[in-house]
Image (cartoon, rainbow, N blue to C red; front, side, top):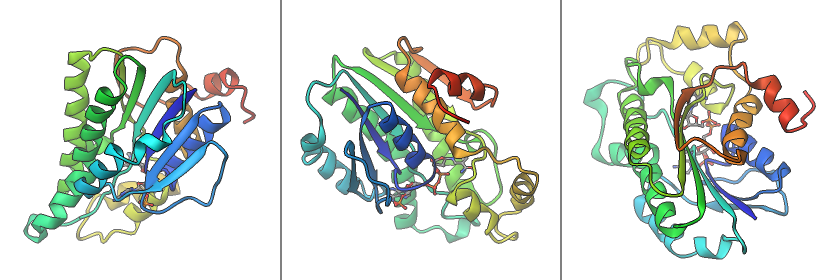
Length: 251
Ligand SMILES: NC(=O)c1ccc[n+]([C@@H]2O[C@H](COP(=O)([O-])OP(=O)(O)OC[C@H]3O[C@@H](n4cnc5c(N)ncnc54)[C@H](OP(=O)(O)O)[C@@H]3O)[C@@H](O)[C@H]2O)c1
């Protein structure tokens, strides 16, 4: 049995990735604060606030074990949950706000990688960390989002150097996707986020990538027979037709 843990499975990319993996016969544990209405006999959804370190530790060190299927051949972790909040100038941030956002975008994904490497030692372990263009480009108003994604990207790069046994790791920047998060970006105040026009134009020009297409890239890495030990890439787009035929999916 192949087993996937997906953070942020209630909407957007996480939910699409869950659906594709289920279609391919995987057992999927989705973790987020709310639950998608979508159900499947191999899809278990668990409510955990991933911005609260104690909640994350407590779930993954105890109840998580009850969700692990028997006879696991491969385990995949999709570190996908994230937020762009808070958006605005430096003089507004509180300690509790910073702690919870860096926990969600950076500490929890790194801790989950650490926990999975311990728990599934000797098993084929695949991890995808969802990065962003914001990890390498500075946007005024996005200090916390950019720096937390940059931290996660560097964590991926270091782990890529370490080549931990059994682990295959993908630092994946999906590009602008048509999800709730993009909608939230387009609703930001121009004063607080001056780059907003770029995102309004992407939507108006039809340049947002459908989330189903990005999810295929995730499936490809998790399903690959011999994945690279470490890959760091931004989604390029030309793989779509290849994936559709490889997984026998109707366009
Ligand atoms: N959309 C884009 O253009 C874009 C571009 C580059 C990178 N990304 C990255 O792609 C990833 C997925 O985003 P998306 O676009 O699919 O956005 P989305 O539709 O808003 O999904 C975000 C997911 O994260 C979960 N989440 C947020 N806060 C959480 C918390 N405290 N605890 C647990 N789960 C939490 C949400 O679930 P609940 O609200 O139910 O908790 C939801 O399932 C993010 O890491 C984002 O930074 C997005």
